[in-house]
Image (tube, rainbow, N blue to C red; front, side):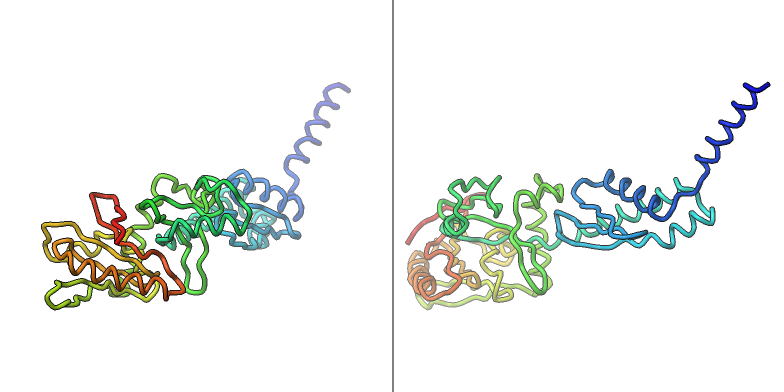
Length: 291
């Protein structure tokens, strides 16, 4: 009988411990551990009773989660701890996904000179310019041009690194994503071609966008291809500056020469110079034709 009573007593103690409601601090710690297990790219820090701070490594965005209302529902036994965990985790993941989507949709491709990458390497004293480890992720466009990616917002721009790309889960799709983002950007700003008659030399076209991303049209050339007239020979693009893109057909060699001379002058004068050269489209590649 004594043995039976002791067993019943121990069972009662264990049941009381299991049924005991967590304190505010215990509840906060429990939820923090849960959120840490849901996303390793987000730093989770308990900053007070029922207060958790989150910092997304991929977006650098910070937020504070207030658990007061959820704890009151738990404390009043309106919902059990598993329900609280499920609802908090669902909200956390939803907010995180929206943040990542917003970040992904802000990526714009930019054309830079290879010398730009070399100057950055010199400034930060890095010898290895492998794009996988370099602070700025880039892709080769031609022998002297690269494509980099920027997080673009109304107030600032920030270079995209390989770490950013991996954190956002877009290693295989970043080029397509940036292309689509730029196309939407051009459409929003009414970007278009403006024809210029060069008298007997032929004709050329200016690409007019927003006085910032004109040169990026090289990465989304299909945006203007349908606007260009039929040409039996390839088009040549000149990008002397960030905000200048000139297009001319090799059907008009004198026009190409004239635009080339003008591009060299703009290249020397521009604070945002890219290249004095012309680039001929060949399939999906761009070939430096010099001039």
